[in-house]
Length: 282
Length: 326
Image 1: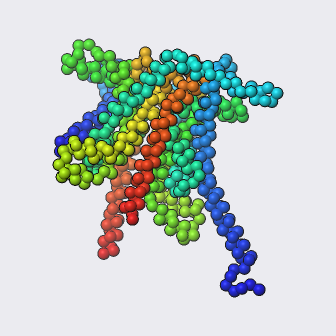
Image 2: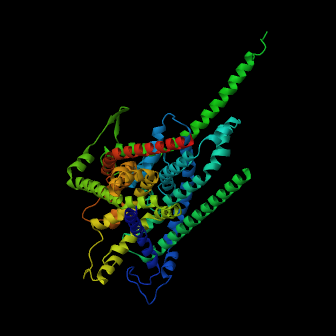
Image 3: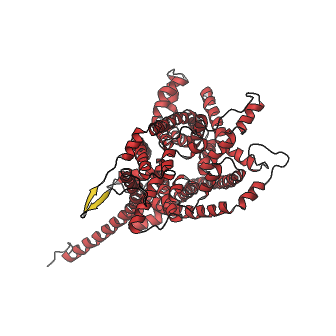
């Protein structure tokens, strides 16, 4: 055990270093005064200069606002559709077309983004030719395109959450005369609500981060935040992008840490409650 | 007239009607739950592929839309006009074939690297104490939640000629002048492995975590050295995890666009970049669609395999759970 354990543990530590050094370097250099990202200007650093540059950049702010609106709409639609699909896949047994639905919900996760982007743009072009809608490419087409791949992730989250619950609670409600819709609203949905929330957050992040699909379906005039970042970094490193990265990483990291602590707190409370219940039974 | 104890005809009919109403309403509900997402995916996932297929058989032209229609109408009869020029172009120009093969090779090598790095990491997490496991998993998942584009961008700063890595190499005297790291195969592999490593680790961890340590103890009791026990017991059991992780890396890596554009070579581009360039720079929609169809043909088998692996893993889990409950 010990020697092999040592090998895999060393690999784990080195792997984590590999995963986190780039992120840490982004953060450190965002406080660097020099325009050259790689030269540390010790005399004038740390500085918040690049945060000022970032927050006064109208293009970045406009793009962030567009990305935010798209991500909220896409994540919400995806959460609804993904919950429906996940429920169907986990609870409806073997219905006709189940494997097709399963295939259609998992394939977008691995599909190369250039293909999804191209095919969705061509769809919009053809539909526009036929019925004159959607009028032009922009926020609407980006949102529609994002829903499709976000929904796939929500479906997977919901499906695995439902697979973890046995159906006895739902069956009991049904035996007591509750209609399927009522069973869903009163029993199933409250049980999977944390999963729906997690799915929404995941969908939001994916939409917020998406570059390639947006580039295809955005059309001229509307740029999401990743599109603006991409056009900046294609020309080389630029320190205000480091500042932006630092802001985004801190939001995500604090969110994930708070969520983990909260879940641990809830689990501890549940364990204590169960101990108390067991003690009461004695 | 009615016999006592038996419901009357009217009552029976009423009952049947009520039952019918309930079941039809239930069917309606089920149909809604299945139908709405299925319809969405059909419109936004299946139909677009048919359109791509259709346009790949057209010819480019200077118009809106910039491709020829598949049918022309002659006295209300549709006359199909199928052009193979796009595909002919793709198969005769060695540039495309090279790019296609290069993409497959890059994806395959990256998958292997992810496996070699990810397997020991997943193994260590699966064998860690309960309290550590949550934290370690969180550390693996956290990069998922941060911008993929910004994480790839971070490597530009590390790898460029006056970047952190070259500065370190020069300051310890390993090299007198900067080594070109950016826009090489090396930086491309770094970028892909870095971005896709969590996709390899998570399914491997999910598999390794379920292994029964008693099997390894039994192997050790029977005199197997740790390496032999690993090769004969752990490795074969983890094959589904290896398959799932490898496919999750390989499939998207073939069509990768952002990483090769920011970190990859300039003299050899990958097929995803090719598609994008044909579409945006050359405005040749039929050839871009042809490239998409060829990538899809390459990926059909891996995608079907992935779904099979995931389904069997899922069912094995459900089965195990049923056994535990029983």
